[in-house]
Length: 410
Picture 1: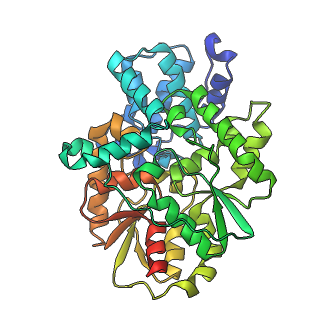
Picture 2: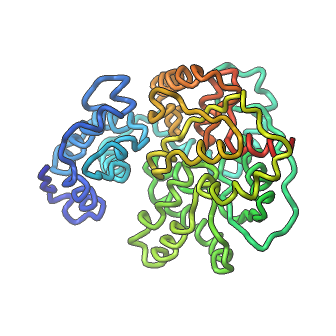
Picture 3: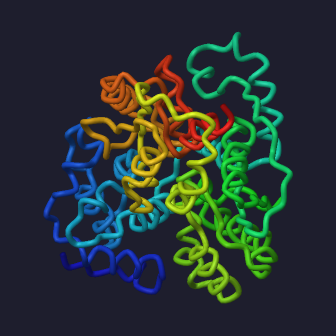
């Protein structure tokens, strides 16, 4: 594919970056076979190849329209296409650039702007926690569409108080402490059982993904810099890793080095933060020998633990099979769906709020495959996936670390 930038974009860093990515694409179409929206809609422009064609046109000088914007908005940014692509096209980075450029040229309706503003400002806000508590109080009175977004109140249990020589940082997240606080405390308890202390930097907030992917890239970068500042004293003190128990946050923090590469004040620090960042599942191989003797009783092998690997884990971070393998080594019977385990569940950050029709279709499709396993519990590794899947099933949906924590406390 030959791309000739229009004069408008020749001097822009994001335009030049997009051109470099586009030159990798050979337009083979392998990506369409694994694109969730193409599978649902069958429209070439709702697959990666079609969206790449639209972005290429804009960079070459064509005027984008609301239709262009709609097709880019429909992308889940699941990055399944990156796993499939034989040419190594960095589609996730390209779609961020394309959406930003199109949004500069195509005004959104006022109602759409308002919803997006509320999401990008509200989800990372300190007011989100009190608002969620209020929502949980009146949850029984809510219509189903709102109830789906407000999980029942959860008891987080006790945070471990023992100190250890080994320490890791953990990002609490912007919505997780309010929506599902047990995920963080379960993580701390499991690591404590393995002789590792979990440290949370109070001034660290949202990873930056919400604003960045809603085209407030400057706002997202500001949150990234704030996190780097909050973590840096612990990094200098020799913390082993920065642990992410939300794979959506993990894939973003692992890309701080890329996103802030042109920032002279933060580029080196951002690269260091990305290098230190690990998904919680990456610690599992070293945890298994320490945890196995501490399981009070063997997990019930007759009960299937269904596992949905989030897109941000298997495609964004390219981590596959670790959770299933290492939980199995601890005695759990862990199974992934026999069909379409690679496809997105439809949560995709704010996607389920902005594109509910497509999102629920993907959720029900995913649950159909998971329910074939007849699981006692469905697990995942990202709060968005967990909340979204739970809205469509009576089977408990948890983070896999909660299931491990339950077994350690039996």
